[in-house]
Length: 528
Figure (tube, rainbow, N blue to C red):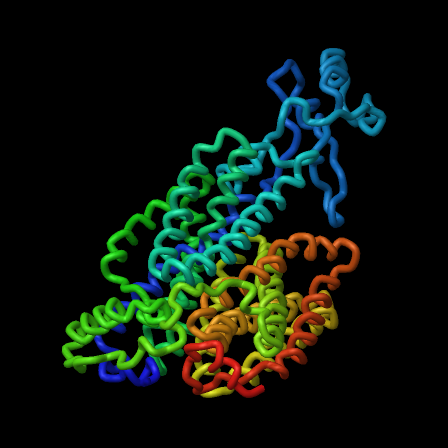
């Protein structure tokens, strides 16, 4: 029996069929670029203070009603308290002057019983100002993002299982629909509770369609084109969406307008259903040889080449086709010592890179006073990272590339604490260097994971590793809070994780320039 790549070699690697699949799948992941990180703008907390209602107060007392406090060495208005309004009203009626006739520090304070007044210097509104997620309810603000990431976690796991059972194409479009529809419905949320539930549901499709699209392209495309797609093509599609996000957010500064502006264009992807085919590799693994051949013959017609009379000769004799209904699941990733060791090490690497990626991405709000510029910096550094990842995948062994990237992340993050405060630009450069490393490493891990597992486990393995890595992203907000106790503790933890993972990567098999395994038996033959 011919290897799959050999069986379809007559198509060539870069015909019109492959070009169509390549660019359409890259375009399909553009919404993922802003699908998670729009929380940077959606859940941002504008400057705020207690609302002072329209009552009979002198201008001097109206200005003095909100007490001041020192924050990071600066005098700012209190966000969660004000002087008792009834006392202030009486003092104003008596004609007393605050600060001269009355010592303000002696006045009793109260909470923001009449609500809050939010600054509109940057945003017209966010969900924080919409649902008053401040002061006693400020825990809801980071928890909202955590719910989205939990949705991403469950979606990544379920999509892998569903994709291996029902096909790559149906799951790709189903998750795109989930992401789009629930994002639109969020606009009509009457409360934070409803919004959060819908946010979780939206998260189910956020990264799931990226995984399905990635695996679909990796299985349809071959040779160098597959390498380009896996490392640079689909990742640049993600980066384009990420860089478009601050542009959308800059012009759509109301959270409802932003959600609609980011989700409504996704309906333009509906015609792609008739243009993107199912994975022939997956069809073969399910024993559906005729359907796989029909797709390849159509591709041959599009590429204007002649297909042989029998394309997949003796494929019915293959083990994966003899028992097409013997579906594989998560437990097969732990079935043997060889597969189990590979799975555990890969999960560690995924957690490390994903925690670093979200930690450095969410921390970019501290890079610049303007959140739109910060977001663009964080997105733009991913472009050279993806190009470097593609070059590494093309010319360097996978294991060497992954180890080098992890060590680069560790060194850059460890070095930040050594930079004097007067050299803030150097700290910024080191943090962006760390973001460069984790972006390149995350992209490379998708390709590395897909190359190590056979067809019957490939999407389950990718989805499982991605799911486990989401645990890291969910705890990232709490990890960043450790900086309150020691400024550089988050960077030290991320750097240590990277160093430990670099050592563990030594024990992974090498997949550089090896054919994709079709069966579990072929995976066992890979050398460590």
